[in-house]
Length: 534
Image: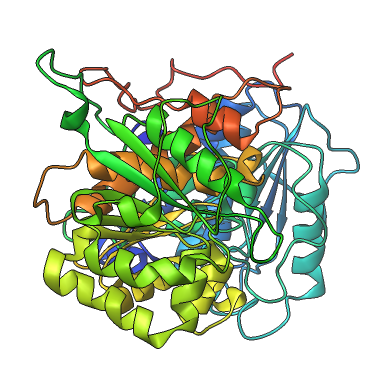
């Protein structure tokens, strides 16, 4: 069953080890070559769906099973009347039985084999990347790629023709969303439209790290294999259900949020009140019943003319034990003074930005943070680090964090016994005892100052609205906040700059009862329109 993956539906994610176990188990139950034949047919069907009028289809096929999938697809495309050319890095003498059988079928169908791509490939053609898939145990992991492989990878990356990747973009690690050493793209993002057909399972690397950029539109075919016996390593976050507000409710029904941050000019001459103001705006537009704003270091704001609903408070006037506190947005050095009380007294807590940096540098604050879980449960606290802040909290470095974002999220959640939002491309949400989620929404428009403050404020509002005593309150609120935050950017008007303050005002939650379109299989008569259709 061929599905297009969209943010409107959650999906299980399986790592490469689980995928290989499923593949081995299925191969033992099925007739020889069945999985490869199913995979090749799925690739051919999707190729015709995304590029129904392609003049030429060029397939770059590796020597392993991924290449065999490509050879099977070439056979089907040739039989369908397509002009097909294949560059194959394997040989009949060294091929595995499945790939050898696929090569023989391709030859019998009249597929043309060539040493390289056709001389001219453009937007009206199609390239199929069937070089490596998850097969990185040889070339690309322990040694530099061959000159032939590197040349094909460079061409696939730089071509102006659309590219359909079989299982994974070649060189991308299935589990991490990072390229294997020596297989990184030579320059910049891909020049042309990208599609990836994940086979058997969806891999986490397609949805985080650089995977989101190089995979493009992701499709999935389970090849008729039941995945129920293999637990996933993570999942794609689902859209929040939302809920209409009862008529018999009041402002106290939806929680009180206090924003603590926004260092003033007094101590260092570095005013950062804007960060706290944007977090407060996001909390209001995210549905909080009441929002209080406690600026630090003598912040001189008397009233926010753009957001008069915010109630100004001195920090010492806050009743922390009855509030959901968002602490750290623009907090600077001033946040260190209030952190002991915030960690000790806050009922629910979102820690962001400078609060995280202060905790990373102070073992006593780390101890207080860990002790919160014992008193209030792991659902009462959420950390929202970007990769550098995560590295500081783990006494590590950003390369290690980004090298395996899922593992970094799990390590943070285990160390501090709370929910964690590891921000970035494919934001990871992790918590003790929970299956991690990768957020499928958001785009590069969010790469601007203040959007993280907006996420923290929105998260505070959603955390405040969680049922009292919910064990996974922070985990569920974090998933919902990340999804809404990213979805708001996804529907941003083309050509209109996104600023954090405008993002905060545009936030909204889905209403309960809204019908999300369930994924539908792509059949013979359900071919989507293609951008290269003439």
